[in-house]
Image (cartoon, rainbow, N blue to C red):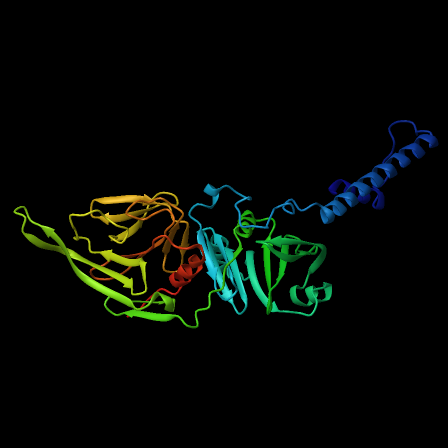
Length: 388
């Protein structure tokens, strides 16, 4: 393109003729030279025009990604290791996202930003922060067409084709030449429209999209609320679990003579109508002469990569690789894993650290959990909070 400009400048602004040191060329040769120059200019213009056209019509390299079910097709499982989980019950979805990104919510928008870029923009006083992935909610229209897309999304063009994401149909819209790096998936729901927008040029945005999945909306209107002032915790749970029962006692051991002694403390929370759920934790000095269980938990600490250390006692730890991490409390969720500690592979479990004077952490276990109860257990964990 620079070459084209240079040639055009030479043609439109000819230099002052200099005395020729050689005999004047025949006029026919000058005609040939002029034709060659015109051909070169035309060729350059045609090439530049083609490049502009190709850029506007280039194939999107990610159109072939299968979004019909949550997957890591845009990266290996190790690429997503250590990612956090964002879960939104109101919108009915969850995604995983890198630890170096932050979430911002405003009105009906949920946006994921690159943390480093965000901090640089704030430091420089800038406001234009690139969103790599976002989800927003819109009123359900009578018809999703170009007019609605323009009104709702602005500079987007509705494509003729549709796709599926996690088994649900979605309209596809792509940004025009100004916001061509963005793509939108428009998913009609019963009472609203869910709009997923992501940057096709940002690898993290595409990977976040690959983890998107709809979650079962659990009716919690009849749920109970459990509060424990001793532990400083509160959570909601299904009514069919019955009444929550709390027990705190000393850990029973024996001295060198076989005399019973109390070493440390432990607590357990069980439910009257289901015997396969137990929550609990131990103090750092608790010890009992028996096999350890999942709820003999003290606290967890960060290890290398995406792993954490489960602290069973002061000198007894083992690594765990959680499936999900629920923030902001940092609840580690584990399922479909064989971990020992009387926790079968078909169990669903979780860990959270606490700031209690005696108990530094709490473990959750649902042994042999039915498939249709996993959503309820996850919902229960999402309601967990600390109180004063």
